[in-house]
Image 1 (cartoon, one colour):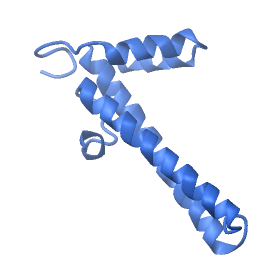
Image 2 (cartoon, one colour; image 1 turned 180 degrees about the vertical axis):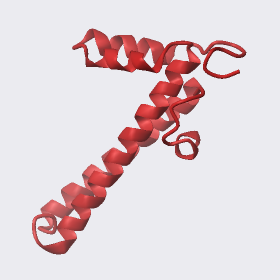
Image 3 (tube, one colour; image 1 turned 90 degrees about the vertical axis):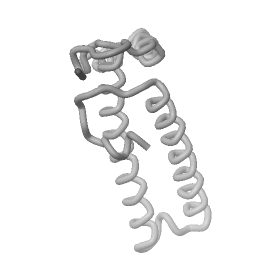
Image 4 (tube, helix red, strand yellow; image 1 turned 120 degrees about the vertical axis):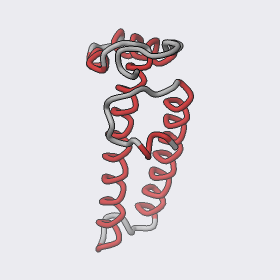
Length: 118
């Protein structure tokens, strides 16, 4: 998977398929971690002892890694549409920001070289 090979690279470009496949993978991992966390809390493991602490720590570390790798991939996806990675900050605007980012990620990349990759 391209997102893991270039996990924290903010230059270059990323295709639509690389971006959306990583999004699907990220969603599956989050759901799996939530199910494991729910099962651990139901069994009484999460809140007591070292097992609960380790499970919580693993959950937090995986979420931090996936979030940072996802942000780098979003910047590379924006570069593929020949827009600056700083456009990801528009996602902070309520409602419309997320819609604008969605449109950017759905746009076809520029054919051939652009200013982000020769």
